[in-house]
Structures are given as structure tokens and as C-alpha cells.
Picture 1 (cartoon, rainbow, N blue to C red):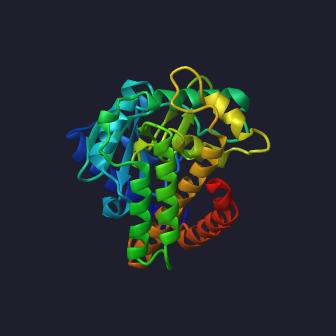
Picture 2 (picture 1 turned 90 degrees about the vertical axis):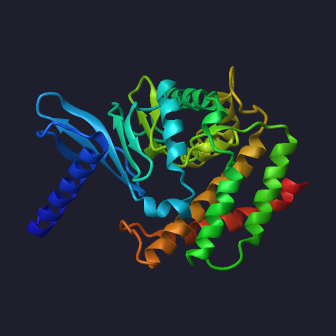
Picture 3 (picture 1 turned 60 degrees about the horizontal axis):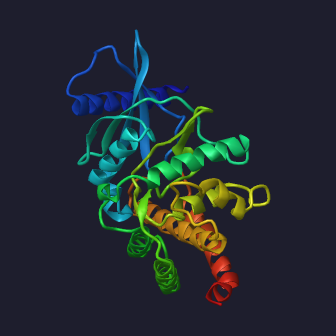
Length: 318
């Protein structure tokens, strides 16, 4: 590693040590921190704590809270849901948290991110169990803000920051129509992860658990499933098969809602469009930019959503 990069890495590690001490109040002076690359995140920086005698013990999450108002992140709500999920065996134990600074210290759990289209049906069944367990949590841990309101907020923030150009009225109309359609079916909101991409899972081959709860909150029962739908090859696992795997006893997923899952995949993509537009706008204003091309991502998501709405809106209305 070049000298300047090594110095930068050491400085970042020392900053992480200082933040860990601030959060924990005290710590072993021999504790070392190393980047935690098992879980990849574009919003946060993760570190593992390593003690000389006991090895890796915990994960320190350092969030950039300057983005929170634009991304609609509520750190108090995040902590409540993360603790409830841990109590249900769904995620790592929360050891300490500071909602103001966005610092979060959790127990390390073993496993690797779930890899779509590998691991067979057994891995999907573990994922289905995790989603059912999550949706069984009491919604009182959430603030009264549903997933459609969150998506509208992201899109509006992206426009305000200049990260998304042109009118978003079509997207707002579609979100309103889809929300109205779902409400008419009598669907009840549940606790959702709302960012259930493979990088936010840890699978040890026996149990699959979830991490990174910053976008969690009230959601439609099909939203997390729709995110998984976008990750899994539909030719290999058709939507009806996914519904069968994620349904069953204790499930809030309607077995016959194949078309509604397809509707919800558009909602997921609009979430991604708004998120990437916000991050692009913040980067243009001199905000955090970790090297990811948010502009290209937002443009790609907009093309995808526009194409899907163009071809499917009339069919969904019929």
C-alpha cells in the first residue's frame, strides 16, 4: 500500500477508535479496529473490533447523519426496530447506540451475504423465514410513516437537491394509484426492512439474519418480497414460486398476488431512483461521495421504471 494511502487508512482507524470510545464510554486500550468488508454499504462505514485474546467481538457502524433528513432516516426508529429484530433472533444484538451521531455498536454474527441464484431453495426458505419473523413484530416499534410516503419523500428530496431532473408527477400518480389499490384489498401494514438486498443479509447455512436497519419501518407485506424478486432470476424462480416459499402459516403475503408483486417491484425501483437521486444531489453540493456513480444509477433506474410503466400501466389498470 502506498505511504499516503496507508497514512489515510491509519487516520481513519484512529477516528473510528475515538468514536468507539465516545459511544462505549470505555474500552480495552489494546482493542484494534479493522474495516468490516463482509457487509457492503454505500451509506455507512463498518468496522470490526478485535481484542488480542478474544478476537473479533463487535461491529461499529459509522453513519453520515448529514444525509439523514434527505433520505428520511430516523435513527431512533432504526434503533427500536434493530433491538426488536435482535430480540426475535433476526439480527445482531445492539450493544450501544447514539441516534444523534448515528453510531451503532452491535455484536458480531457469523455468516456471509446471501447470494441470489445460489444456495438453492433452502437459502430462499431461510430468507422467507426471516421475512415472516420480521412481519410478525409489533408495528408499534415504527413511526406512522408507510413505505409509499417514504418513497414520495425520497423523490421530492432528489428533485429539490437537483439530483433528479424533470417532472415526477407520473411517479407520484402511480404511487397513489398503487397505494389505493393495495388499501382496497384490505392489506395491513407490517414491519418491513425496506432495503432487503443481498448485502444486508448474513447467512450461516442454518439461519439467515438481517443487518442495516436504517430504512426499516412500516411497509406493505409485499415490499421486501418485491426487492427479493428483483434479486432472483425470474426464469429460475418464478414469482408464483417465491410467493409459495414466502407464504404459509403466520405470513402476511397473499399467495395469489403475483401481479401485485410485479407492481411492488416498480415501487422498489422508485425507491432506488429517489435514493440515488438524493445521493447524486448531495455529492454535487459537495456532500459525501464514496466513489459510486449515483448519477448513472439514477438515470438507469429512471429508464427502467419508465419502460415498465409504459408497457404495464394499462394492463394493471384493466
